Amino acid sequence: MSKTFATPPPGEQQAPHPSRGIIFCPRCGSPKTQTKNRAKKLGGAFGTCFGIANSFSGAAKGATVGAAISLRAVSPSTPMNSLTVAVLGAFVGGAMGCATGAALGQVIDETVLNNHLCLRCGHSFSTS
Ligand SMILES: [Zn+2]
Image 1 (tube, rainbow, N blue to C red):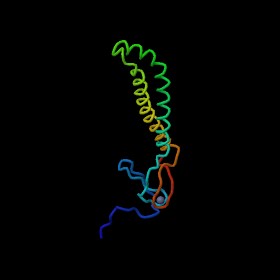
Image 2: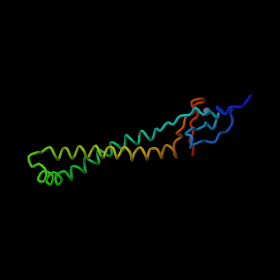
Image 3: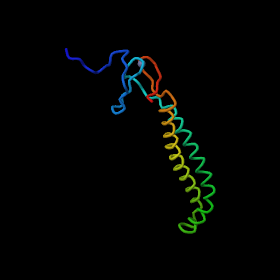
Image 4: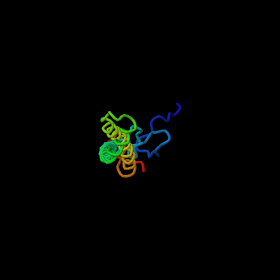
């Protein structure tokens, strides 16, 4: 009878193994835990909105100058350029805002909230 190390006995305290990506529940020792990442999702959504709004206000300011330069330089007969620049700028700003918000949310998840949920006993806990 060789002892397997697949499931730790209930009640035993298990240290988290971040290198293996398995977090054990501190209450019941179950490896069946999941990450909630609530702040990460929320941060990503807020960041996207903020990034788009920020880009639009920035694009609106820069559009006049940018359009004047690009229209004269690239194609003088295309009035769509400034709008295209503004929309593209908003997309880029939104993507950057999303990444920033998600990164910020992940930090909040890991430090402030109980980001981990045990699927066995329903216990919420944080690893830090
Ligand atoms: Zn548990």
